[in-house]
Length: 301
Image (tube, rainbow, N blue to C red; front, side, top):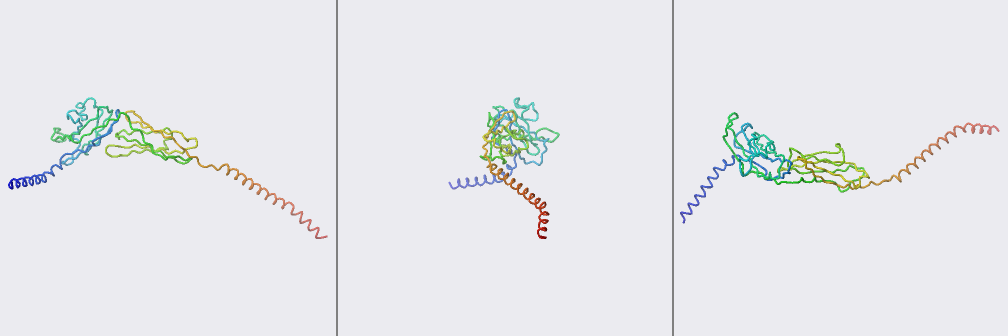
């Protein structure tokens, strides 16, 4: 028993040493980073973020051949530089957006069908030289595949705004919608407002998701109370969705019924005072010489 225990201990130590020795080799293997799941709008498009690393030095794009295929059969290609080797229903609807020489294997797929859910995996082949296209290495990343959640209808835009608008003061409404196709950003439009009143933005949310934004700033009037403002999102493939907001406009306090009569009365008083001042001055200029003559006659008597 003691001998058996010693053998087990030696075997365990040997395995640990072997793992420590070969682990650096595995860390230098070819690896791919592919998002696992993505929403895909039927009839629209989707972009799958993909990058890879390799133990080689800088490799030119001309030496690399990227392939996307079904996980069940690597010969069922959905993307390849030779389109004749691509499945017919994917032909002309897939392309690489990045450069393989920059370790970018991102895939764009357009005209999505409801059965194109995957999983789809990335595979790379390395040519011997730039002129000798015979393959020296092949790597299939079957553990880094993407699956699509098929959306028959597009998501509705989200509207962010203050609860109440104030008459004659700027009021901002933000319309945003998430999507997975940054190469064909959804177009956001408003039921009112002009291009000068709209600011557009597009930002990456991570894990293959993006957000398109449209910011509308208006000056609501009293007549806009209980009126509707609608934001519509048009996706690649012509599908649309919309969200509507009902404006509640708070009227600003109006003191015109007090101010106008007061100003009018004050203005009338000022005009009358000025008129009276000039009349008195004119009177004094006209009658002053006569008063002096009369006073001089009285003094002589």
